Image (cartoon, rainbow, N blue to C red; front, side, top):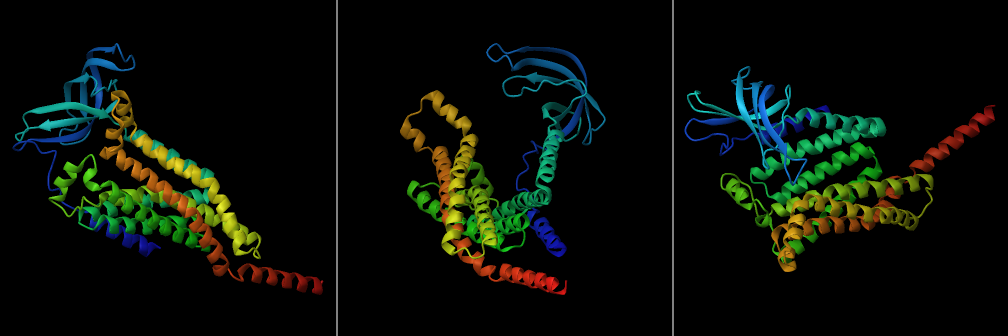
Length: 393
């Protein structure tokens, strides 16, 4: 395991290293901009009042003194103006840590500092720590293994999946690599190296294959692809300086989006059928299949609903704009953003639904085959030992 971990870390480190083709933080000439932490040391004056239409929104300005905490100018103090408007609305207090944009000329004589945002990282770390702590306290060893699985998934996406896309690996192949690796590691960590985990992995791969087929069919019918994303222009600019294949990015996005729900329902059904089989080794395949279907029917509705609500939350601003402007129905349904969201939500939901009978069938077929004789032999040995002990007594 240690060797595998070291190999994984070395591969992730090697593939994720690259040189940016464009530096957005370099201004004209030798001018540059950096983002540094600063502490508000004083507030000289302020003219701030609530907005008339939005009382919880403050507008106006503050004249404050900040001391830079990081960067080449760390320790120096500057008097700046903090403007509060609809775009930047951060009311600061003395002692608060903020993130500032520091613009300097090539000779270093001119410095322009603006408050970019509050320093949110400590609270984000705190929230993540609370999440991990609760997961470990309530889940015990399983919770800890879930934390490890989540860490593997996050690092795989950031340091392997995205670099693979950037370096020209076809998104379909990169997505399948991520799906297979994530399914194996996550399900073996959570379910243990057992037969139910193997069945869940096979079911996840099958569900992902279903998702792939559905996406390919309806993307072709609706003429949606990576070129219909909202940020296609920036993606095309990146692809001109890298190996990024924009056209098939939508395929990868749909597959990754549905993977979590498919894994969840696959391990749930496999675990339930495995419990039934362990309790009743003589249960037939039909009984095991029916047990898996019963569990799956209770889950697939909520799973599909979860996917649809998740995609609804991600496009909430668009939905509000559609409602506000009374956009025509045909324009809404055929717009790129709405069409892609609908395809993603329904593809994932259909994959979840079809994964239920697939995993139930695999569980009924493979669990007795993989575990044939194990429980019976344990029971017979136990009965023999008990009989021998009674005889000697």
